[in-house]
Image 1: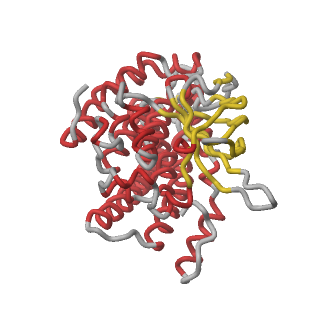
Image 2 (image 1 turned 120 degrees about the vertical axis):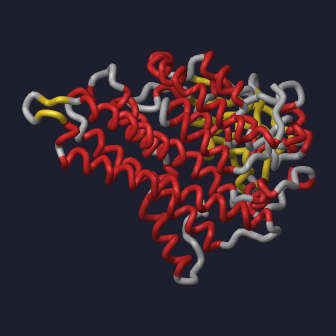
Length: 392
């Protein structure tokens, strides 16, 4: 598929046209415990996987707002598809920070190549001639069955009591094994399986120094100079978790509105005439909309800063993190209230509301959603102190 930077809005429109089919296939993903092959093919055809990818390799270098518009729309229809679209779709942004040789290996033959990840350190890079040896196990690699590469959280063993050096490592399919362990209450269709590596050689250029990336000194920035790649890793990657959750809440709201319009209780009568039920919809809609608006406000302001040649401030980063973690909490709380008031029909396995509820609660358990520590860090920054949260 031929895509250009002018096609970003068209990608969002193609995503919206695909939503009925994604909704229909969502139960199949739950049974498979991964996205159906046709769903992956359809998502690739929309171009969502290329939105944050360098133009030099067939990407769009789109505004993050457009990417997350597409993500929220998908997640409102199928939580698992929205989750995979988001966490896999944000990886091209980081891949752009690797040396050009790595980007060539990933995308030269197929610009629609997907990359999965597992960022929690699961193995240590042991230095050897020309690179490193790596063994280990990593969990929760969403969409891994459909990906040809994986980003792994690793550290370099410097020996002699020196602290380990945090690095991300890219491996090609065939250099790792996907172990099928994903059997969960929610996000069942994400196929977030384990990655197992057994004494594989990793060339030096396939590792990325995280400190250098956070300081915008990674080697890929020599060729990928678009403002997009000056956005903070912590913001984009934490929003890749909360974005789908807000989308799920929007999906729950849409489902509940349709249910309420036709629901009749034998005890209480028409739900649409119950002021408490109807008022609760208004409250939930406002909360969910506020989460969306804050997310996009932060993305817009950050992009405006880097497009103008500026550097994003710690205040901006801390606020983005605050709104991200509270966006998860508030969206799930609103979603819960809608589900709780929807009556017994909502718990039927045939009703998509129960799947949305399970998916959102599974997503909330991601480590990025730790609430109090993130808010404590924000307050420290607001008082002129250094942040205590690494994801800022």
